[in-house]
Amino acid sequence: MPTSLTFSYQELYQLYTKTLEDQRTGVVIFKPVYEAGGQLADLIWCYVSARSALDSHLTVEQMLGQRLLSLFPQVQHTRFWTAYQQVLQTGEAQEWEDRYVGEGLDNYLLTRVERYQDAYLSVSYTQINDLKRAELKAKATAEQMRRIVDGSMSGLMACQAVRDAQGELVDLRIVMTNQAASNINGRSVEFMQGNTLRSLFPALPASGLLERYFHTARTGEVQRMEVPYYHDQIEGWFDIVVSPLEDNGVLLSFADITAIKRLQVQQEQSILELRRSNESLQSFAYVASHDLQEPLRKVQSFGTMLLEQYGPALDEQGQDYLRRMQASAQRMSGLIRDLLAFSRLSAQKPAFKRVALSAVTSQVLTDLEHSIDGSGGVVSIGDLPTVEGDAMQLGQLFQNLLANALRYRRADQSPSIHVSSQLVTIDHLPVGLVSDGLTQLRQPTHRPARYWKIAVADNGIGFDEKYVDRIFGLFQRLHGRSQYEGSGIGLSICKRVVEHHYGAITARSQPGQGATFLVYLPA
Image (cartoon, rainbow, N blue to C red):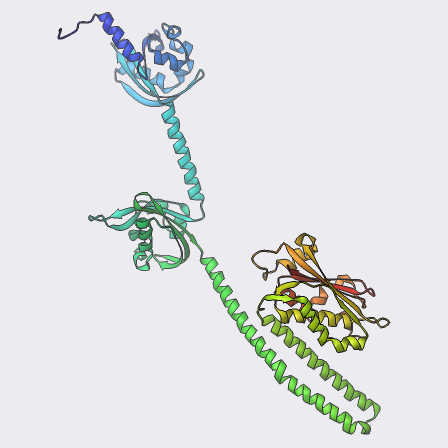
């Protein structure tokens, strides 16, 4: 067998050409054309690889023998043309990366130019469009993420693990942070990046926070905490979230919640003051129910004795004075009792259970039997539902509504009162109640879809509906005390009971045509 092969020059040329054609690298050889003064005027293609023709969107035949500037005039205004001139003049090869845009082409090229046989120019290049565009896309994405990070109101710190010679986690180094973190810490982004947490925040280990960061780094457990930090020139409360990163790193996200905490403290102080105020009110209620009632009872008692024992000795005017004194004392005693009832209702937390309203109203009718018989009134009760509530408070509700209907009766007509119920959806509730009465802070976690609409209708004197909001206020009256008795507290108690039961109350009426009080309770 022969130990070597012998090729002709033509065979070697074909071999090298075939090798070049199979490469992703484009190769061209130019013959320079000079002006009279020796300045480079143009370049003529002497050799064009198939890759070069493909990248130029031409054929090899269309390019060979042609002038470069006749097909690609834009080249003269690029770095490529400058490099061609310099390489021809100095003989020193050049290599660079650049973008060529012109004549329908848009390519990123890694190019090498060198002088060939002193009279020619050899240009080889690799088209790197995919690589470059992926790089630019990654850069744009990184810039976008950077803008998002810098635009965050929360401070962010990405940290990598720092280990000792034994491989133990001993610190965390900041590799990325944002402007919000800089604002909170009072140090520039550039200063923080590259530094460790121990070096920037010497008090961090003693605070226990660093060990908690280590815990996330070791276990991958996400942690959230609200902590005070008054060290290292930092003062305030912070909401901190610790998330794991690769290679035992952590991402610290933290927000300054000092203002929120101060507001919470103020609220707690306000709640404490309100509790103290309620305790004072409870004390006042006790005094009102006991200490104030006692002297009133004595005034009434002595007034009765005066009328009985010394009344005949007094003239008519003196007796009238005594009767007025007795009436005022009785009225004050009733007012104190009603005020005490309202105070106790405000302080009570209702114990809810299933309550049959038919049983509640039956007991109320028994309590009001004397008033009903005395007025010649008729009270009819329709079918009433069973609801979740407090039986005692619901009794107060119906007691006051029925007593109110009996009190404000017409002089020429005996009172006629009817109580009824109807199941309705929230869509059928009056707009004012949905936007006001049913959206109070006493609402349950979710608003019921259905309500019991309970109507207490009478044939009494009625009232102008423009006063409907006023009548539920404390001590509010539409009529003089000389016309109708009452303390002005009864309807306030009704409203408070309904609110305790997550419902609402309103009324419909016209003067002289009776009134209908509407109570809405969750079904």
